[in-house]
Amino acid sequence: MPDEFAYKYILFSVADGVATITLNRPEQLNAFHFPLGAELENAYARCDADDAVRAVVLTGAGNAFCAGADMGGGDKTFDDVEGGQRAARPGPGVRRLAAYQVRKPVVAAINGHAVGVGLTLAMQCDLRFVSAQAKLAFAFVRRGIIPELGSHAIVPRVIGFSRAADLLLSGRTIRGEEAAQLGLASEALPAEAVLPRAQEWARDVAVNAAPASVAIAKRLLWEGVTETPRETMAKEGPLLDWVGKQVDAAEGVRSFLERRPPEWKLRASTDLPEWPEK
Image 1 (cartoon, rainbow, N blue to C red):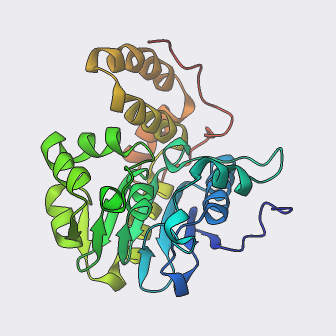
Image 2 (cartoon, rainbow, N blue to C red):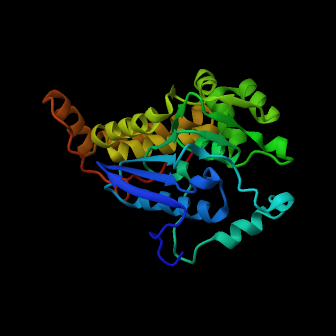
Image 3 (cartoon, helix red, strand yellow):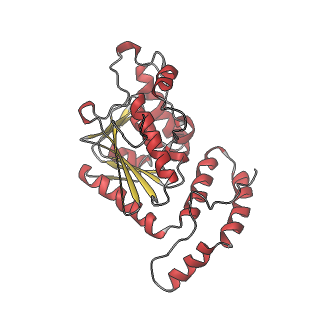
C-alpha cells in the first residue's frame, strides 16, 4: 500500500469525533482476504494516532457485515495462512493494530451476516450491535480449521465458558436475536437501525467521555481478559491516583456541576501515564 490512506477494500470517514470503517467488498459479501485485513489494521492505527477520533465504528457495505474468509482459493484457502499474511503486509513504517489495541472504543455494527473471521473480527471490538435477522457463526470447525484472533480467550469472557463451548465447538449458526440473548451482542435491532445505533453510542463517548480515561479503562479491560481480579486491582490503584490529579478529573466534576459539555484536555496519543507493573 504505497499510500497508507488510499484504501481499496475499505471505506474510511470521520464525523463528529467518530471514525466509521466500512468493509467494502459488497459483491463478495465483504469476504475477508489478507489485503483487506492489512487495510483494516492500518485504519485502526490511523484512528489510534488521531486525537480528533474519539471512537470507531466498524461495519460492512451492502447487506452483510463479513461472510467469512474469501474461499476463492478453493481447497487451498487455508493451506498457507502465514504466507498469505506475509504477502499482504504493507511496506516498512506502516502501522497496523487490531481493534482491541486501539486506544478508543471500537464498536462493531453487524448489519448483516458475520461468519468465521467476520465474527472473530467483531469479537475483537469492545461491543457489538447486531441485525436481529443476521446469521452469525464461528464456523471454523465446520471448515476443518479452528477459531482465531484470540476468540478462545475472548468469547468465554464475554458469554461464559459453556455458551462459548457451544458456539466454538459446534460452529452452529445463530441469528442476531439469539446473539443478543447470549450476550454476544449488546442489542439486536432491525438491520437499517444497526449502524445509526452504533454511531449514536460512539458519538456519546466522543462528547462526554475523557479520552485519556477511556484509553486507560480500555487497556485495563482487555488485559483483564487473562488476569485475576487481584492483578487488575494492583494496576487500578496507581492509575486511579494518577488520573485523579489530572486536569480532566477537575473538568469532569466542574462540567457536571455547571451542567455543560466537558472540555477535555488530555490526549490519548501522548498524555497517558507509565503503565504499572503487575
